[in-house]
Amino acid sequence: MKKIIMPLILIATLIACNSKPEGYTINGTLRGDVADSTQVILKKIGENNQPISVDTAYTNKGLYSFSGKPIAPELHYIFVDKLPGYSVLILETGEIEVSAQKDSLNLAKAEGTLQNDIFSDYMKKSQTMSQRAMSIQKDLQKATMSQDEATISALSDEMKELQEEYKNFEIEYIKANPNGLISALLIDRAIASKSTSIEELKSLYEGLAPEIKENKVGKNVLKRIGDLEAKEVANKNTSIGNKAPEFSAKNPEGKEIALNSVLGKVTLIDFWAAWCKPCRAENPNVLAVYKKYHDKGLNIIGVSLDKNEKDWKKAIADDKLEWNQVSNLAYFNDEIAKLYNVDAIPAAFLLDENGIIVAKNLRGNALEEKVAELLN
Image 1 (cartoon, rainbow, N blue to C red):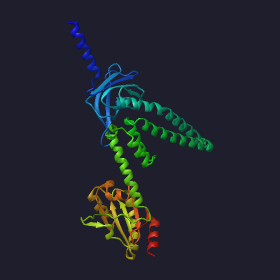
Image 2: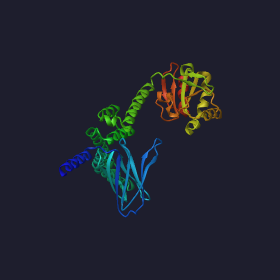
Image 3: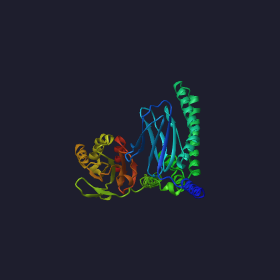
Image 4: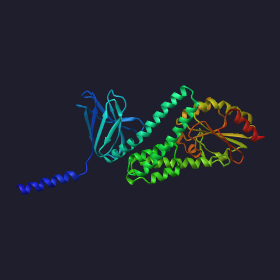
């Protein structure tokens, strides 16, 4: 009988060792004096860019745990009731060990799965440079308070060198870890900081492992790179000396108005919105210029980035705007805004009689002077 049982036990053991985990488990350890039944909350960032709760656990002798179904790797955060800060980990299928000191949750160590091991390795290697940056910043504050210009200059140069070193470190880390979610996150951060060329960003993305490209973060990185390329094209197309891109949209009465149908000897394309206080403050000046020069050949077409039709129409009436107005009521997702690379308002493009862009973002006296120059 023993000869039969032993092979069965061995087979069962081998199956258990080689089977993939069916979901995730977080085994957490909190060092320090943490009361039993302290609430621990697992959170992630929701669609509105706000943290949302995923699960709740309670401590028992400094230990807590979470478990759930299989999940694609995604950044999550652990908050502990009445303790400052939070711990960061990458939630993924597998068994994750998280350990932290109650007074420094941000220094928690997460390990045991591929993505958390890569993430922990990155944090460890980047920590030295982060500490150097904090030291320089501290010395810079002292030098600023004492008005030591020589030291301020030297420390500023040192900080710039460190920033370049940090950038190169992250680029090399991305290349060395194509299967790390942290690599996609670092590319995403490089996009936000505008510190890396589009070509280099594309190269770094292409080097990522297929499973990271298919991850939510990877897909977002690809979209953002595409948006950058589109903005670069739009910026070139709307630079001074180029012909203004053609567009059309509906006016407040629902009639389609095209740019080429309202061109004058001089034409101002004015991007604005009812909710934009600087735009509303500038409207009286634009109105004064229009009244003075419309009979001489100045036309204006306003492109509103409003979302609410009633607000848009009310602002036109309140500000007594007499020129053509159009809007897709799409905020900054407006196709015309994207076509003209407008990501802040007010924004304005001044065209000559041939529709060539001759000036951008002129306001106040500068706008009137340029209009007068063109019409004379």
